[in-house]
Image (cartoon, rainbow, N blue to C red; front, side, top):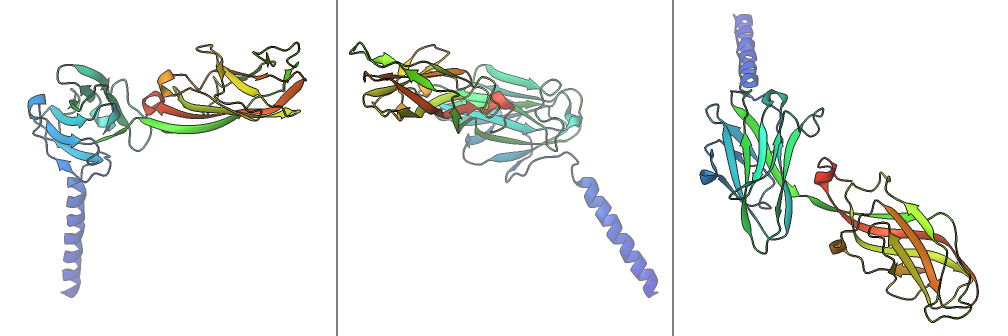
Length: 299
């Protein structure tokens, strides 16, 4: 009798485990602290996210009888963010969109544009930008597509698109200056060194200079020396903001929208009449980049 009871209890436990496994969704979703069970099928009754920074993500459970899920989000001025939705191959045809209150901004159909398709959690992503002077409301829209008819589980998250980075890159060779003779109040420029960063894989695609400086070793050491640099685009020489034979700093900022990944040139201007050289020249960048240019990955 005791053996039969133990067997019966074991069978009950096994059946319970099987039932639990059957009710857990097989779709891979990311962890979330908020779950929303559908009911937001139009822009007019969109789920209110609030400010995109209030929390990181929500888990959406879209009922089988609903095709659309809408989110409204308040973006402060000068915001550059992304919305990301987890995705499963069963959901082929699922669409993720970003909207203003009147028009679509960006749309991605899973049939043609899934990020990280061969990883554990593939995803869709769209960009949202508020370039206005005040907070405005934007929308995120998910459409299930035509291929999946059951309950859908997906995670929506948001975050900053713009990231920052830093890099130091050496010039090859030695710049030489013939000396400012005959003397000129504008000084004398050295020979030019060039550095091609256009194919450097350590720099993110679309990286924009936020600040730049140079350093080098002049021999013999002289006063009244200015470092100078030129990006191939826009092809303008920038002169250091101060006089120094060992370093230079330039009035270049993110508003100039100068790409890091291009050919850079260097020379130095000297007032001294004696000849000189400069070696160990290197250029240091701080930059900003948009992860949307790199499959929503950071460097």
